[in-house]
Image 1 (cartoon, rainbow, N blue to C red):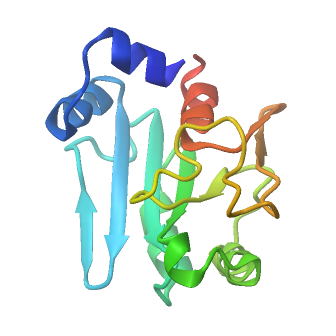
Image 2 (cartoon, rainbow, N blue to C red):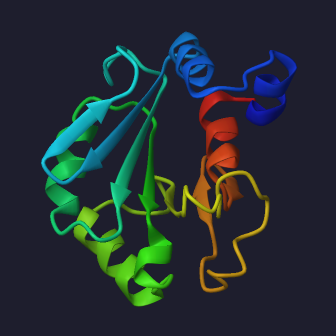
Length: 154
C-alpha cells in the first residue's frame, strides 16, 4: 500500500513526499486560477502516474485537464475544495461531464485536501454519501491512496 510504504520509509514532510513521488515516477500537477504548478520535475510522459488536482470552484476544468492529460499514462483526477461548494453532487457531476473522461477508466475523486476527505480513507467521506467511487482495471475504491495503489500495482 502506498501510505504504508511512505510511513515505513519515514516520509513525513511535504519535501520528503515530493522526493518520494519523484522516485516513484509520479507527477502530481495542480491547476489553480492563472497558475499551473508541477510539483516534481518529472514530465507526465515519463511518469508512471499523473495526479491532477483541480479546484471545484474553477470554471475551465476540461481545458486544464485536457492539456495536462496529453501524455499521461495513468491519470488520477482530484476535484479539490469540495467543502467550498458544500459537497454538491450536482456540481461534481457537472465537472465530471465537463472533463469529458469516463470515470470507469480514469479515477475522478472528490476531495477536501484541507480536511483530508477521500484522501486516505477506504470509505467515502460522510460528506459525500452520493460518491460511489471509481473503477479501473477491474478494481475499485474511493480514495486517492487506493487509486495510487492500483496505478502503481501495489
